[in-house]
Image (cartoon, rainbow, N blue to C red; front, side, top):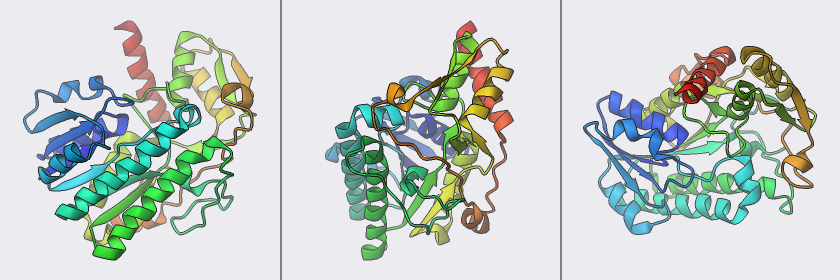
Length: 323
């Protein structure tokens, strides 16, 4: 098959492109390289069946041509990272909502199956742990920019599922929980690449808030495998699935793990959210996925534990420092 991967030069998108090529498919990667990087897909440029188109997912004519040229679509293009959301809220909202609307309209016109990647952020400030797909979403106030990303991605889901309900456009929604691995950058606030970079450099490892907030980290290889399986499964259509790992760790514990595996050279420094971002910043205390639904449908169980995730990130970053 020939797939369109929007955001194909991004961290997750580049790994997905690579997997699809390895499976014998051809791929069109659409990316404006605003948060994606050419370096992520440079090694794919010489592979038969791979094409990179540098353009915005909001460009209607380009998206339409890409959809026509493909048999199915993975829509990953999005503004990413807490820092980008807080500092550039207009760009965040417009890229997410307008981009998804553009892609969905073309997919609906040409009846292309589409998998939309969403985020655990849509659960908002919910306190029922673990988060299940049918749980209520509790958002913060519109005056706090932190929640713009969550609300925009929730609107993406509503719009995608509306296409399913109105015309039975083949739609799958995947909510990703803190995906990590090689090629991920820490420049937009992703915590593990940032901690590892600080630890390897012997700089203070900066933990925001009091460090008690916890997350579950998923290796990109586990995520990509689940995305491929969900796209191929006919019973996934019209449904929402969590993709993640249920190994929970606090940010302070994570900093201590990174400190230990990078050589104990760095101190751990606590930084208030108001200093790291803006006054009034809010964060989710816990983010743990219920994986029952996706396990039941495709047998998904994460293969990579946190130890291996950290090892892979450290290996890549250490190589870049010496190379």
